[in-house]
Length: 328
Ligand code: UDP
Ligand code: MG
Image (cartoon, rainbow, N blue to C red; front, side):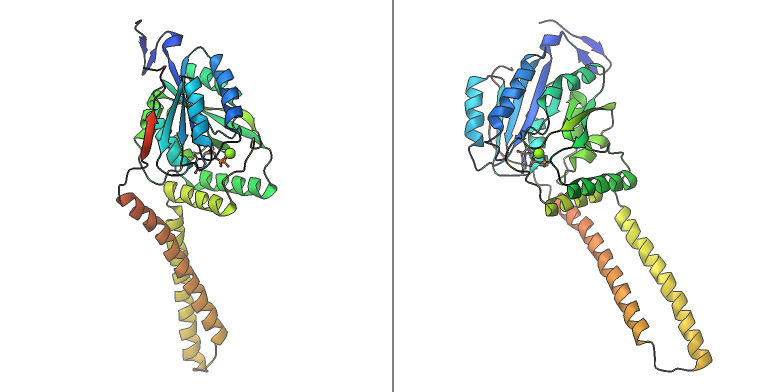
C-alpha cells in the first residue's frame, strides 16, 4: 500500500485511497428511497474516492428497512445501522456518524430536499482544506410563509443570543472532515441541537449556496409544535439568556414595586388611609404572579434538561449493524 504524505492534521493519500462516507438517517421513507439512492449513487460513482453509504434506519414501520437491505445486496458500498426504535433524527444522525469510517463524512436527508448533486462541490471545498462545509439554502421552496417567518425569527434570535455563531438558513446537510467528525462525536449530550454542535466545534468552515427543493414525496415529520420544541431545544442548549432575562425582569419588577410601595406609604401618611386601590392591588398581584410563574417555567426547562443529562443513558441502541462489504 502506498503511504500518504502528512500535511498538518490531514493525511493526503493518493485520491483513490480516501474514503467518503455518506450518512443517511431514514424514518419511513419507502416512497422516496429508491429515487434518492439512484441519484446518490450516480453522483458518487463520478467522484474519485472510495465511498460507503451508511443508512441509519431510525425505527421505520414501513418497508424502508427491506428496501435498504435489497439495495445492500446489490451494492457492496452500503452499510446499514438498524436502531432498536425511533430515536429522532439528531440521534439517528449521531449513530450514523459513529459508524462512518470515512476521511470525510457527509450528512444528507433521504427525502431529496438536499440535492445529492451538490456532493462534488462539498468534497471540493474539503479538498481545499475546510473541515466543515455546509450547504446554505438560498430559497425555501414548497414551505409556507408562516414557516419561513418562524424559521427566520428563530435563526435571528439564536444568532443574537447564543455564544456560538450559527450560520443562518443551514440544515444538517454538510460535509465534515475526519477530525471534525471526531470532535463532534465527543459531544455526547442527550439534547442534540445539531446546528449548534456543528458550529461549536469550530475548525475552518465554509458554506455553499443551494436551492432547497420541496420534499420528493411523503411529508415532513415536523409540525409547528415540534418546531417550537426544536427552537426551545436550541435556545436552552446554547444560551442561558432566558435565565438572565428572568432575573432582570425580576429585579426591575422588584425595584418598581419598592418605589410604588414608598409612594403608597407616603400618600397614606399624608392623606390618611381611605380604603381604595382594589384595581392597583389586583393588577400588581396578577402581574407579579405571572412573572414568577414564567420564571419558574424557564427554570424548569433548564432543570428538565439537567435531569435528562444526569441519567447518562446511551444515546441510542443498535439492533443490527451490517458494514459495507467493500470497505475493509
Ligand atoms: N428522520 C429520522 N428520524 C426521525 C425523523 C426523520 O431519521 O425521527 C430522517 C428522515 O427520514 C429524513 C431526515 O431525517 O431522511 C429529515 O427528516 P424530515 O424531512 O422529516 O425533516 P425536515 O427536512 O423537515 O427537517
Ligand atoms: Mg426534509
